[in-house]
Structures are given as C-alpha cells and as structure tokens.
Image 1 (cartoon, rainbow, N blue to C red):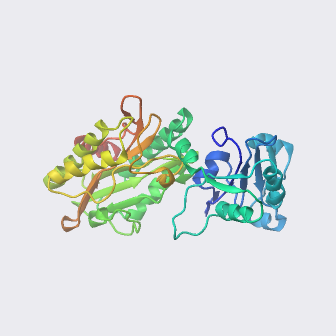
Image 2 (image 1 turned 30 degrees about the vertical axis):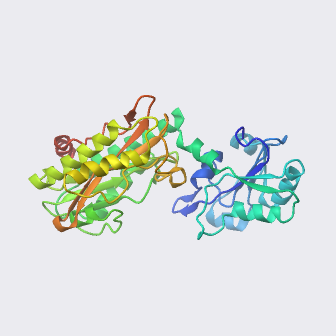
Image 3 (image 1 turned 30 degrees about the horizontal axis):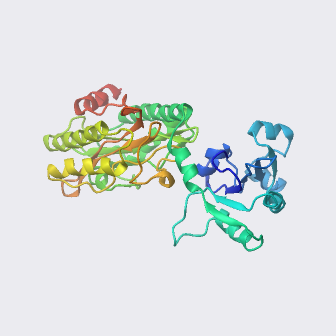
Length: 384
C-alpha cells in the first residue's frame, strides 16, 4: 500500500477447488493469507479504513454439505488482520465511499493476454470509469510482481521445508523402484510421504516417466510399468504453507547408468553447474538460458525448453516471470537443463532450486544427490 500511494485497488480471489478444499490464486493468497472462494480485497491507502476483506454471504444449507464458514465478527477481523471484514454485497458502497476521495484505480493483478477473458477486477474498473467522472485505471501490476519475486526469510524457510519434504518423498519412492513397478504406484508413494510429513498438497502434478515417457516434457499419464535398463525421470515438488518446491532427478531403474546414459547425464549436470556459476544479481534468465543452450549444443544435442523460472507461491510464477528479468538478492529460481532422446527411449533432466544472494546463489536443494555416483549410492541406500 505504500507503493500504491493514492487511489484504490481491488483484487478478486481466483483460485481453484481441490479435493481438500479451495485454494486461492497466488496473488490473492500472497496479500491476504485467505483461502476463500469469491472473496474480494479492497485496498485504500489514503482512507481511514485501508484494508477491507469482503467475504461472500453465508449459505447455511450449502455449508451443511461443503463445510462451515465463520460469521463476521471482531474476533475474525483480528485473527485475519484486516481493518474491516464485510460481505461482498457491500462492494458498491465500499467503493463509492473511497471514490469520493480518489478516482485512481490500480490494477494490481497480473496482466491478461489479448485473447483471454477480461479479469473481474478490470471489468469492475471499466464499469466504474463509465459511471464515475474522472475515474482512471492505472497499471500497477509490476508492484505486486516485484514484491512476490523477492522472498523474505520466512518465505525462503517455507520453500526449504517444501524441498526437505520432497527429498524424503523421493527417498521413499526410490525404495520401490524396480522393473514391473507402475509409474502410478510411485506417484502414490510420493503423495503418501508428502502428506505424512505434513505437506497437504503437491505443488503440481508430478512427472513420473520411464523410458520414452521421460522424453515427454509434461508427461502426466503415469500408467506404464518400469522396465530394466530404463531411466526414470522424476519431476516433483511438495507445497509447504503455499510455497512450492520443484525438483527433478533422473535415476536408472536398475540402479546403475549405462555408458551412454552416463554420458548424457554428465553433460546435463555439467550444464547445470555452468548455469549455477552464473547466477548472481544482475544476470537475466535469458543469459542463463543461453549458457545452457550453448553448452548442450556444443555436445551435439539441443535444448528444447527454458532452463529457469521463478519459484514461490506458485511453482511456475508466470506472472513474475520474464526472460529479461534481472536477478536480485532474495529471488528464488529453478535450474533445470535437460536432454531428450526419443529415438534412444530416454531423457535426462536435473533440476534444483537456487536462492540469489548478494554475491551469487545458494542451492536450497543441495542436500538431494545429483552427482551420478551419488545418485546410484542414494538408490542403494534407499532399498530396504
């Protein structure tokens, strides 16, 4: 709100319903800590009541089916930390009171593409400008993007906890790896481990693919059985207090890499190390991507995807992602080069999560083995 200055900003919760309840989108949760469908946040920096959370009206009959919602009360206001909590039906009166003092409307949600549906906050602002003389929309989306990109110590700690849960889940998964085991069975082991450790959600649908499946970038079927001699690609991550881990390891189903698999694995690891050496304040995601492409191309292969993206409240923080983005201390980015050979029925990707520091970076997932010999030893230790 200090960055907004004058005017007002409205943000709608635009999350998704999951099997265990509603999950707010990254922007709304980042500002509110509230997972509530149809909720609205009104920020009015120059008003006496500066933060207003609007919750939908209660439906007692519906609550008997989907779960209870607390009534509006002073204790709820204090618990959630807002200046005021009201119902969404009072949105017009709240905005009219604010617009009597300032007619600047800040768009703080991320921008939508030309062919996308008009976001609810922008639609609201358009209705206001048609009715309130002098009202004008200002694009302030960069403010929230910048805030989300640079993590606090508490945010980094949440990501590290998500990584630790992911590491333990992978270790338990490795104990089950072997010929004849189905990809979906490994998925079940991973999910059970995450939840047992206290991570209620996966950060994304895990990619668990062996053989040719490992060459499909976002492979989701997980319906084949592992075979001897294959490589198994595991792109997975737990979510802790809304913050995501994003880790990829490629392992041999038999416990040992073949000579050809080892050669490609070592190239991908060499590429990842080259990227990591160049992560520092002022570097851009494009520069890191160019390093990866040059290294892999020199070895006679091609890189078919980007090698880094911001990580935080969402695993792909697309609304804070820009290839020209200059890294700053406190940002967390992934490092994930890969080589995919469908004609050889194997692919290799290695992914870690890096915190940008004042002088370079710190690999938050450094405890997870990634040297080839260490991966083989990790598999051997994991077996019962």
